[in-house]
Length: 499
Image (cartoon, rainbow, N blue to C red; front, side, top):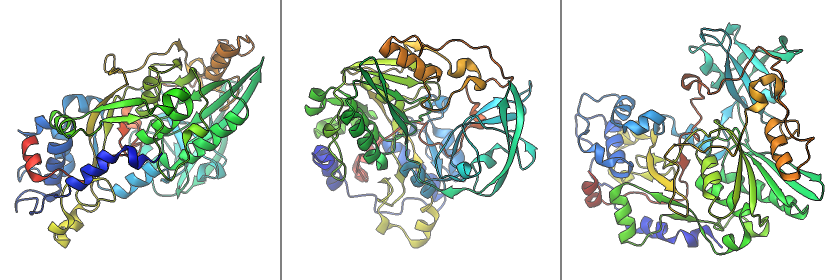
């Protein structure tokens, strides 16, 4: 069944709401990008009612400063919404084709004062610049261009130019020099289906999937993996989301449709329900337009997930404080239909959803203005800008959410490597603390059960990566990305009601 037929209401909405603003969107005094921020947030922002008293003035000449100043306090606290002046890079990241070194990092303190840091490699994408430079999991970057890593230079790890990295490794409980790598970023394919395997033990056939991001462009990789699982007679599944910062709701829906009980998927049962601002909720409900994403829904370019569905009643999910947004949605929204066993830590805490908003380009996302109403100069000023504001909170099929306490708590709390990087195992190795625990729960085989080891390294993993040292391009961790809504704009008369 095509995703288009299920989201027919959104396509209808696209047809009805094509009358974008046709007049010049700004006065002669207000910065045109600042006005775009106001017009977008006052219409679609979850807290749109707070925008009424925040209209921009000529003094609001910096769009980014204005954007931050008008955000809801809850939004600011969590760091959810963001604005960018490089919208094409944002789209590349969403599609799984970023320009990067190809590694995923966390950080550890290099001194007691925490003025210097080590960048610890969590995993490296195959055939990436980092992989070719001999950088791998548990590699420890101690210097950038010969200098210690600090708040002032760590951004070079996510930069666009060749960078010299000093790599150490843990050997016999100590940090020892490994090599120096000169790495140049490239546009790479970041297939999130990073690793899969089938474990056989005592009549159990256990599928294991390490999934890095929710990227719909790679749903075919999910299908192929689950087809292999199904053909192998998999009876149990371990889904490893320990470092997964989330992504698209359509990818989450597709993954859940491969896992959940077949009858639930066949019935197109609700997976997640979105709640927008008061006006949009009322308008959607009045027009009988769905705010629900249903299992078993897929794009016409994709294969029917039912063909590879495992028909499970229980799933084991590894999730940690490094698991956000769509990872949490998957873990939480499967619970009405099956037993979800959470191994790991409290999750990162993202229970909201966002849309990409561009001033006028309908190929990018929701647009605010009619392209024909803008002059060439105005389009040039607006072209590179985009917003990813919070537009909704989500619940599961029962109408439940986890806004209190704001994160998901594990059934079996454990720290990776018992808190020490030296104890980390390779991805997919049963010696891994999380994977071993899940295998033990499924099989009862005590040889899998993780045993506390003495921390042999002076490098202890941080419980939480400092906000100031996060990847500035990490757009998925902010909120679930609503990539299935085809709305361009609300008519001016509706926008006035919101404002």
